[in-house]
Length: 163
Image (cartoon, rainbow, N blue to C red; front, side, top):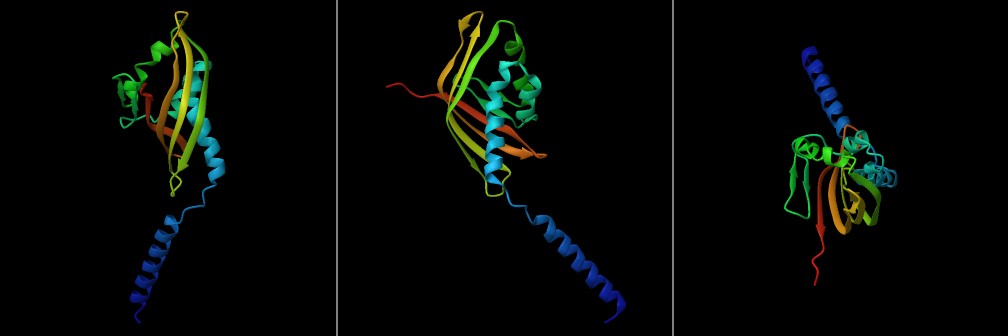
């Protein structure tokens, strides 16, 4: 074999080996990930206790693909649209009382970079001293692991239909 052929062969082998190494994923510690995801989901509501916007913004995906569907006709499309609600929550008229996630169920994708959840949410607050609660609301959502952090990319809130 010519030395050029050998060099090209070795270079091709190194490139292929390098590409195959990048595709090997580290095993996902699902138990640890589930705890982190549960905390992320909880923070999506619990941030209001201390009106911690840094916490809120750390768990919501900050681009135009973010989607939040509410039990009313409100659909929030994109992080910029989401931020329009911030003045209401930061108002002195808005007071956090408590929140609870019941029956929180989380699934993680095989690749370990996406998750989806379901729970029943009690989100208890007041507005100008009057109750402003979401009780027994169904909350579902999708999270992705972006740049090493779990963020909510889509969520949906709904009330069960009453008979």
